[in-house]
Each structure stands twice: as C-alpha cells, then as structure tokens.
Length: 278
Image 1 (tube, helix red, strand yellow):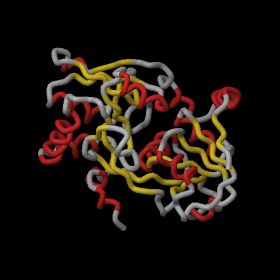
Image 2 (cartoon, helix red, strand yellow):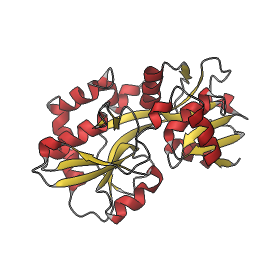
Image 3 (cartoon, helix red, strand yellow):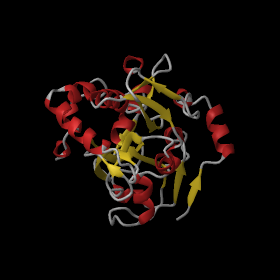
Image 4 (cartoon, rainbow, N blue to C red):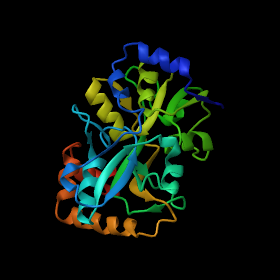
C-alpha cells in the first residue's frame, strides 16, 4: 500500500471543478486569530483548531462558530480566560502547542491512542469514526473495502487505522489518499477519485446536510473515541484539570447539552460513550 499526498495540481483541478463543496475551502488557509469581544477584559488564551464543521468554522460574517468554539468560549470564561481562536495547520498542531504558539488544541481531537502525547482534559464529547461511500456504492461493510481507494485527513485516527494494519476487520486497500486539507476528502469522493472516505460521523453528517450530498455511512464504525482538549505535556498551569472540572459543572447545569444541541440533534448521544451502544 502507498500513501498519496494531495498534490498542487489536483488541488487546482478540484478547486476549479465547481464542486458543490467549494465554499468549504474559504477561510481555511490563513492563520487567522479571532476571539470573543464579550470577555476582552479577561486574560487571553489561544485555542488552535482547523476548519471542521460542526465543531469549528466561520459563520456568514467571518466569525468563529461551532460546537468547540461555543464550548471553549463558555468553559474558559468560567475559569477566567477570553478564548481567542487561531486557525492552524492541523499537521503542525503538536509543534504549535509545544512551542507556545497556541495554548491548546481544541478541534474535535480524539484522545484515544494519543494519551501519552499531550496533557489532556477528560472527554467532553464522544464521536464515532466511520467510513462513508456514495449512495450507489457496492461497499456495505469494512471487508468490502478490499482493493478500494479511500481518502482521509493526514495525522488523524482514520489514517492511523488504515496504515497500521492493526484492525483485523480491515482488508488490504489499493490506495490511501492522505490529504492535509480535510475538506478535500468530500470532493474526492463525489468526483470519484476514491471509493470511500473516513472521518468523524458528525462532520460527515454535517457536510451531507449542508451540501445535499447522498453519502451512505457504513453501519460498522472504525471506532468510538473521546474528544478532549490537548495541552503541551510541559504546561504547568493546570488548565486541563480546571477544564475537566468545568465540563462536569457544564453537564450538571445543562449548558453543555444546550450548546451541543444548537448544532446536533440528540445531544445526549454525544455526551456519553454508551450513547452509541447498539
């Protein structure tokens, strides 16, 4: 198996096809920094993420919004900080947080398998990593992926799963396209460059809803993961513990359910790992 990185030529082709997902690409390449004006008197803390609806994206006025943006704004306000949101190169996230360019990584970030790489909060949400195909595809199970092509975002759990060969359910694929820009996995599937994509279920569902895409998500998930906030292992401020305690309070007072419910139906399902039990 070999990995194909997204080349400039293919980027140009995709951006010029008039693909229905073209608008997703705007605002994702700069290192923009934006924050909440309501908490300006508080000390600032830089939250690093990339564009990933419904967790983090820009609204029609160019302001950061989404589940993680709203949760971060409220949670940091409660512990005395004004959250400032910085769009980052997701592949460089570890270097950025360790260098101090950002204070934390908060962007639908899976804890599982990375426990020793960062200083983590407790999970604030749970998400399924899934495989999606076109509606007319003959792929119905993970075993049907044998000899197929799949697109994933680089440095994510799906990429790790397909390259590690550690999951006996997953057969040998023909190719894995590992793309730096996660929005490109959708036009890759829609245009037939790949047979399947893999990502967070919530993100795929959001994209299907926003752009009227007829994808089919396989019933069998790759895995269910906890989403957390990552700090450098050298961070001595104790913010991961403070945020974890704040998450407990936000669950109890209903604010976490209210925030998640703005973007996802059945928010309780995403707040407990057993919400995915069959």
